[in-house]
Amino acid sequence: MNVYLAKFMIYYEIHRMHREGHSKSRISEFLLLDRRTVSKYLAMSESEYEEFLTKQTNRGKKLLPY
Image: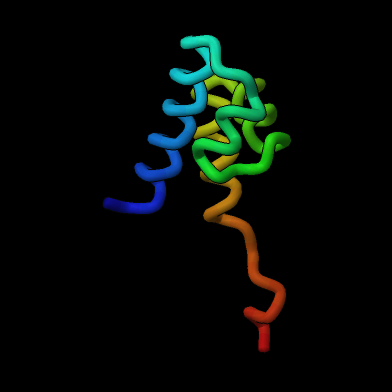
């Protein structure tokens, strides 16, 4: 399984648990994520999350010129 797919699965799991009524703290404990990360992912739409992942994978490296 590639990393991109695994991250999307976490995103969907966060939203599923939230729909079921779990608190952000409970979700973060269950998925071993920071509570602020859970809040950030809940605030994002699916397209925003996809754009976020794309930006993360395409950012430049500081040491590349060396």
